[in-house]
Image (tube, rainbow, N blue to C red):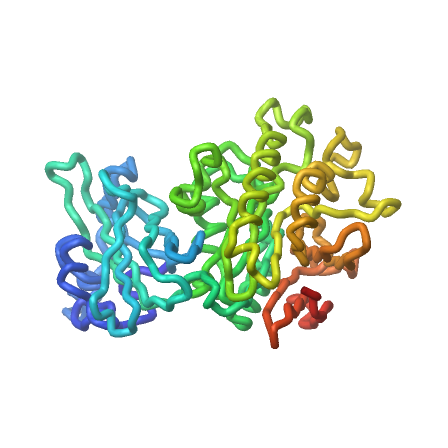
Length: 466
């Protein structure tokens, strides 16, 4: 995270205009018109250096930032849609935030989006979220975040605002049939920062239209601070990796573990409420969108143990969850825009296939397993597999096994399955290495490549038949 004075764009300082020109409306909404870094530069160059005063910080962070330095993380694009885009970012103290955006680099006729749909505008001490709505499909937008701390919030009648921090300008393109058909997949990053850095650097190099983070971003999450670091402010060089590339997030089994993790949507925006009916309200992470000639469909395979497993202490209720997704999947595959896509790709964390007779085959997640976890999900395969087959899905992208693998289509299963690798470096097993799975329409065909980001090689490069 960076302070306002450390932002990459010096134009965000108070003595210069913000990139593209910050509108008066943006100033008024942001909090009194002060731009990032004014206070940081006010006393510079006057006399000998003096030791900084000890910052007075309220014991309760929701009372304000006090005299502490205020820092803001790079924005992260989340839950993209054809007409919506989520933006989340980390903050170091109590603050509010808005996003200014426009369909041109000069920010002509720019709009301001606030946190929350309507009513009370949310504030937070760790992460802020804004969802942009009413966008046009397959359209490029320019945006920046404007974050304003509360230095004092003893109560609403005498709260005090600090100086606003304006981010550098970033861009995104909405989803849609007219967008570039190019995606990447990362998975099983497990908050292991060296392999994570390798993966996100490759993503930035490939510059896809969207990334699917296919589960197990976390290990066990006991507090919000850990979630903010994992999803919004990772300790890597390319911590701004998702500021210009939107991310679809799908849960892995580890993303359900920990006493805090049920509050994950405070950090990772779920799908827009307008995309879910009342009977599908709990399907927060499923997605079905067009990206050029591709239809991308995300499913949540849940935990890798039966609900009755004693380690869950009665907290698991994934069997009804998977059944509800089967109904949702059938409806999404029948949507005219999804059905019309030349290529359909399904993403889920736990693989949907293991060959009978293979070492993985007995460990199917249905029974209490002496290995204590599923290698593949027989239940998901039984619920979703016939729908996938009937709709002509050509590819399923899985994860979970920490080992790259590719399963060819067969007469009984017409879709191929690719499984991404994990965070290991092949020390004891040369088949284990971190990957980026890439899919791209080239000359009307889906080209599938799997990049070994540790070894710097491509381990799979082939076309998937329509």
